[in-house]
Image (cartoon, rainbow over all chains, first blue to last red; front, side, top):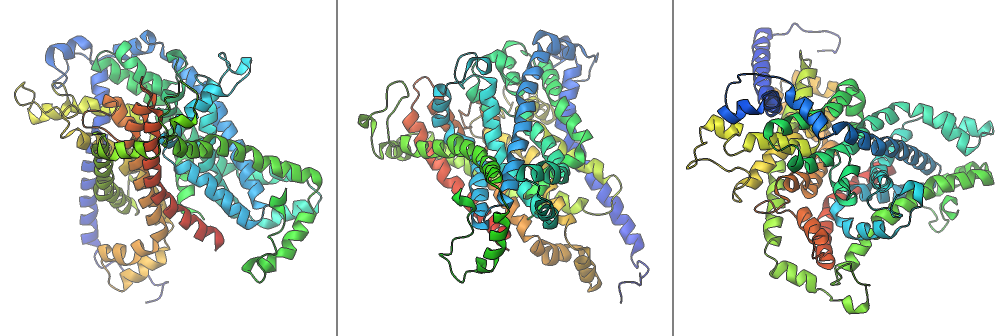
Amino acid sequence: MTATTTAPPPRRRRVKRSRVALHAFLITVCSIWIFPLLWAVYISLRPLGDTAQHGDFSLPSTLNFQNFIDAWTQANLPYYYLNTLIVAVPAVAITLLLSSMLAFALTRAASRFNLFMLLLFTAGNLLPPQVIIVPLYTLYLHIPIPHPLSDNGILYDQYIGIILIHVVFQTGFCVFVLSNYMRTLPRELTEAAIVDGAGIATIYRSVILPLCRPALAALATLEFTFIYNDFFWALLLIETGSKRPITSALNNLQGQFFTNNNLLAAASLLVAIPTVIVYLIFRRQFVRGLTLGATKG
Amino acid sequence: MTDFAPASPASPGGAGANHVPARRSRLSLLSRRDKIVLGLMIGVPTFLDVVFIWLPTLASIGLSLTNWNGATALTAKNFVGLKNYQFLFTAYTPFWPAVAHNLIWLLFFVCVATPLGIFFAVLLDRELRGSVIYQNVFYLPVVLSLVIVGFIWELQYAPTDGFINGILGRTGQSDLIDWLGNPGINIWAVVVAASWRHVGYIMVLYLAGLKSVDPGLREAAAIDGAGERQIFFRVVFPVMAPINVIIVVVTVIESLRAFDLAFIINQGTNGLELLSTLITNNSLSEASLIGFGSAIAVVLLTISLVPIVIFLTRVMRDQTT
């Protein structure tokens, strides 16, 4: 049989039936999968009085958004969202800037050096963070930082400190992805620019960066989510509760403000909403960011 | 900037020898300013990576040989040799349970969560109505932070008010199951919650790999009369070897990094001890047993080097071909 002749599907009816079975199976599994989230939504919509009287596992008498309003105002959530933005926006920008420059510069370097650097950065990115926390913590207590950037004169307990550790850890991942991406760009483009007399900085800015835009968009989406979702670094490196970004603040506020399941469920969902929205809007970039590192190269 | 010198002629006849003239001509086009720019582009990130990741890693190894508590100056008197390790392996009771819990985590991921993610990817890798919706459902937990995953699952596992005991009808004082409080079962409960997130992650990675498999291979196998299962195991799975390595590495590293869920639920105690929580609790506690915490960190580092080296070997093979 040649590739051009399409034989009539001999088993169309069986195929159709297996399709129905597949959908039935997937719908069942997906229902189970999304259930924990739906349960959280359900609890968050029920007033405390209702669940206190009938228990969480019961049919509702009333549903409303009061828990969301209480969580939002009582715990001053907008303030913590702002903390997250103060950390995440510069962290993503600096990470992408540094890693794109490094990945680009490495394409101009000797190949053995290039490989060594990639291994260094990738290995650093893969280490469990707990391996380095003790010396890092000590380092953060002793590195002096001038006043406008740090109100206590050191890196510890400062936005700049947490931005820095995100930049350091995430650069490893981004360099790996960008370096693989840049390897797929046609060499002739940069060679031509060199012949035209363009300097390295110009080539980076006006040839490489525009070509990398899809990869940078993918990484920006992914990195924003990673940093938004960070719990460990903020726990370790931020002491003052009011400086914590929202994800780690949520854990802190649990005992203080979110003293019942209903309020905690509402607060959790409020904290989850930005990442879900980012995912739904930038789904393609998001998935590409994750898989660029895995499938290219 | 010796880094940019052409590959050293110390390896005559090497594979790189042919490229040397080309590279030299490329480099000679670089002005002094260009070399400084390149130096900064490489130097700044490297400096940060070395100072904030690699020096602390080495320092952890050094500190693990001391009894330093962080409060006084570190002197030669603090050197205790391998005493921390000896105590860790023989006398520190939470250590072996923590190792066992990390192993349970790993085994559950390897035997259940990762295969499930691969299975869903294979199911969704076809022209299927609503495929994107199914994918989104599986992927939704991945975009949530582990703090939120933890809270969502606390609502399922809660003893009297949780969904699971509710549906099982075990909410009475005599028969309720304390999923997160019973040290015999809570690690399994937490691993299930972690898998909820891990499965979607693996599914996305694998799906991307499957999309890159040449469809001609499958068609050829189908024409030869192979069934769907045979096509996957005999044709698709073998050509997916590079992705399979990534999946294995991701699975192992995620199991070693496990921290957030256990820490949120009970700070990693009472049945939820993990190497990562032991390090954190020992190093940052009131007693601040820094030397001892570092010894646990070195154990975790040593174990982590296995998947890291596997991954780097693959990177090396890719980059040199």
